[in-house]
Length: 459
Image (cartoon, rainbow, N blue to C red):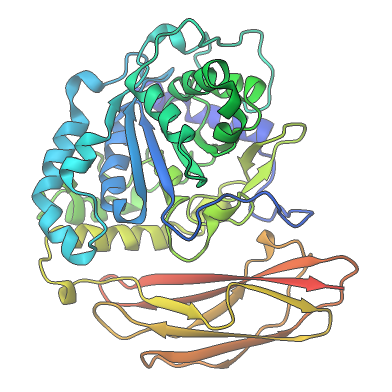
C-alpha cells in the first residue's frame, strides 16, 4: 500500500492548522524582500524521493526544462519512501528516453539541456532511513516538536556537497531547491555551510529558497529553527489539485497523450490520469510572464503564499484556489510539450505567444492619475494571435479593492497594440495594484501567455 496515498485525509488537517486562508487572502504591505534572478532563467535543484508520482512529475519537469537553469537533480528519501529509489535507476531510464525525443524538443526550443548535461548533474543525496525523524505523518510548518534532527554526525553526500558548492558560488541569483520528498539532504548542506564556511554562511543561505511539497521529514523544522535565513515555501494544497485522483477527468488526456504515440519519455508517466503532486514546485519557476518566482505573494502556476506568523522566512500557500485557477493553462502547456516530442517541424506545433509591455512592468503613479498600459502581442507557432484580456489580480496587490479597467483597443492582428486604462485610486499610503495582460495563440492546444504589470500608487 502506498503510505503517502493513504494520508490525503491528513492533508486537510495540515491545511486547517497551518494554512487557514484561501486564494482571497490579501497581503498588508508592499513586498521588499523578493528573489533575485537578474533577468535570467531561475536556477533550480530537484530533490526527489522516487515515489510513483515523482516519476510522473519528472516526465513533466524534463519537458519544461528549457524554462530553467537546472543545477542538480538529487535522489533522496522521505518518511513515505524511507529507503529512496535510486537503486532502480528510474531517472537514468527517463534520461535515456529523453535522449530519444531530444532532437524534436530542441526544434521547438534550443534551450532544452542535452541528455548528457542532465546525466552530469544527477547526484545521490541522503537515503538513510535514520535521517528522517520519528514522525510517520508530514510535519506541520511552524509547529514545535519534541525531537529535532541534528545532521552534524551524518556523512556528506554528493547531493549535499553540490548544494553547498552552488550556494558558495559568487553568483548572487536565488537557488530554488525543490523538495519533492524530504529535506534532509538540504539540511545537511546548510549545517555544513554554517560549521565549515562561517564567513560565507549568511550570504550563501540567503540565496536558498526551499519549495517543500509538505515537510516529508524532520529536515524542514530543523531548517526553520537553525537556519532561519533560508526561505521556506510550503505547498500543502497540492493535495486536492495535483495529487493522486485529483484530476480524474484527465483520463482521456493520459490515454491519448501519455500512453499512446507520443514517444518513450511520455510512456514513463505511469498514472492513468494527471497525477503529479510534486509538480507545483517547478510550476512556480515557469517563465510564463506571471513573475510568480519574484516573490511568494505574487501567485502563479505554483501557488501563492502568505507568511507563517512568528517565523522569519516561512511561507505557506493560501489554499487550493491558488493552484486550481491555473490547472487548465498548465495542462494545455503540457499537451503542447508532449506534442513537441513527436513533431519535427516548428510550424506544425503550438507555441506560447509573446507579449511586450511598452511602458515596462513596474509603473509608479499618483492618486487620481490616469494609468495607460500598452501591450504588443505577437504569435508563435500555429494559428493567429488571440485578443488581449486585461484583469486585476486583486489578491496579489496591497490595494484593497478593484479598479475599473477600460480596454481601449483590441485586435487579433499580429503585433497589434492593445491598451487598458484606469484611474489610480485615492490612497493614504503607497499601495500596489497587479494588472495582468493575458493572450492566447495556436490551436490544438491554444496556449496562453501573460505579463504582470505592478502599478504602485503614491498618495
